[in-house]
Length: 229
Ligand code: GLN
Image 1 (spheres, rainbow, N blue to C red):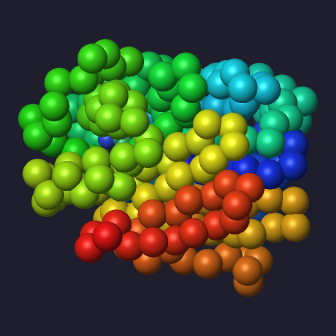
Image 2 (cartoon, rainbow, N blue to C red; image 1 turned 45 degrees about the vertical axis):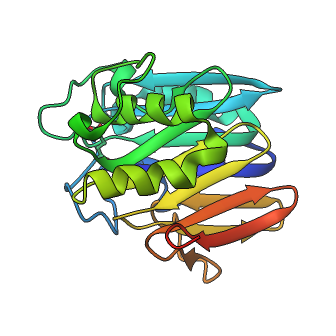
Image 3 (spheres, rainbow, N blue to C red; image 1 turned 30 degrees about the vertical axis):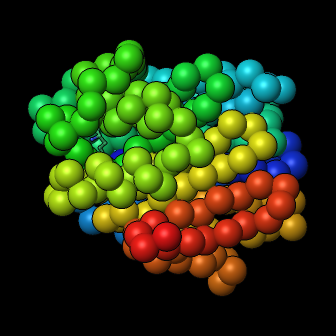
């Protein structure tokens, strides 16, 4: 499983979310604390952030820990909405920047921790890569993020082995699902972090129960069960 992180709040630097925390995504690229599948995340990284309403992305198929350019520039990248990920590729999936989250339809940024059998997915209109996560992202974009909960339940029903932790943001809303892997939530005075695992030992981190949806916006934070709605 990969590891991902989303931020919605006051503008902060990408470095403050990814590089500075003692167990941030940079450290999680080689020493994740809660990862159940895969030992580390060396198959690429991606950072997406909103520049006004425009999603911008920087992705690489190389390990995050070795990227001196990212370490240099990340303190200067600031945004109120960020989606970042480090990747541990599923066996058989291509290792290329276009297979690395976050994926985008030009409006949303989306990351997937997990695995899904592509044969159960409807053919999407377009996908950035043949990677299962890229195809799943395209299916979610096609159906619309307002139907994310339905899509996750439908895909999870069609592939009971699937792990479907999805994180998506559009600049003013952050959505995340827990389906088969860990997910945690931290409400800070200046915003909300949703991440595969806590980036530090702050006691305010809350674990999101499996098969739940987190929805963060100016209206607040809701955590609801995906099934039986
Ligand atoms: N299946 C996706 C990939 O190959 C995600 C893998 C993961 O979550 N580790 O990239």
